[in-house]
Image (cartoon, rainbow, N blue to C red; front, side, top):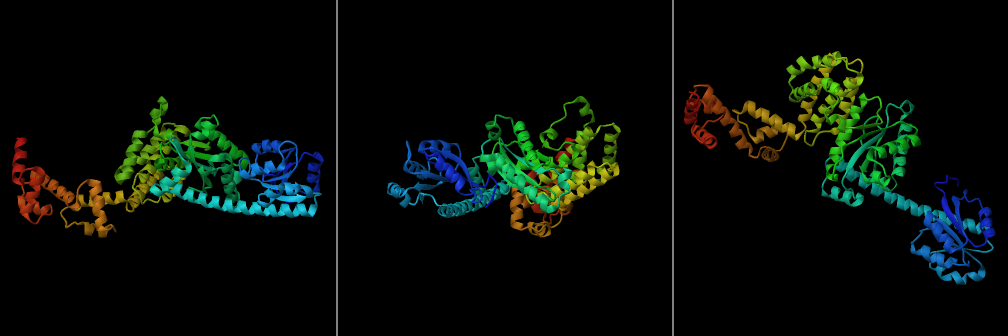
Length: 543
């Protein structure tokens, strides 16, 4: 059984006779049996010192030695204070009674002197199988625990968690303040990686995850595999806390540079990272995760994509020249038009804005800065909607858009088309989001307030339970649907009273009331006077 030094079982030989230790070393092919002689000691005290320096899997010890003998050493090992290694005595026939209690307790095996090769091999193979079986059970348990932890972490990252998820992560990881999510992936711009077949890419993806776990040591649980779940993305996620850097005497930036450098050296590929914003509690990890996701798409405009932080795109530029050519105000206006679906504004201004940015003789960096800000704002529009939005779908859409907007072939006409298409895309997303649904219902009430509107008819139209819709309405506006509808109707009636000379009963019917007395009562309830008095009093104030 051949293996690398990392997976061989480590053996500590303990005997006061050097020739015995050398004889044991030469007696069998230890590596062939899956072992490595990793240390030698002349007595129990010497062995304890070595056990404190590194972990061993097996201790083979003589019984009688000067100073601390084998039985005393076995008792200390049995207590688990310095080691959990298996123990084998080298026992002469007359020494057997001396070690009998330790041997019979089951904590030790023994090999009788003179040592026979076959007997030693038999014991070593049995112990190796025991260790591997125990390790397998522990490994399986660790895998299950890690999978459960990752599931709870993912719930936090997606904002779809409950107290059970929160408490499990809090108790398992003990996360304090100053935490953030860091997206790490093998760069899609690494030519050596991009030409690999899919099976090899997945193999390297797994190696990236394993290397990250080794580098993180006691923080290995903070590494997550394939979090983004995007096509052609081979990523891991890091739940970063500032103690990681502090323990190495580094700043956050220095730690990330060190971490990425180590991963690059071990994998042989360019490693890219996108850090989310720092948050103070684990409940806010979703915000950091979203920032990291947004940053990933903005990265397509940078020549060097190894590290990126979203904070740069949330701040106003400080350089005077950059301020002159940084079209934040104009881009914000275009984003607003896209949000509300103002196709006329988009048509008249988007292409012109694109050409103005180009005509300013902007260099690639400044042009990229404007486009990055634009995409960041657009992605934010989708993320600001309430739950129900498929974030992976939005990411994929924006990834394709980012490539298109950043390409050399892109034109003002295409920029306009992209703005129009994204506006339509947002409208589609709103149909699947609670906030979007409420906005649509609000617009419908504003337009069709005189119709026979009810929670039942609106619920049927928007495929939602009428009782649930009523709850959402109360939460959104602080009043019932009926009170909201009455408020809109009475406001419209007040406008008609001032703008027209129509009779009160005509206005009542026009805004949706068949019962005049009921209309007057509702009007008085809101304005404090009757419709007739309201018209007269208001008109007099303008004379």
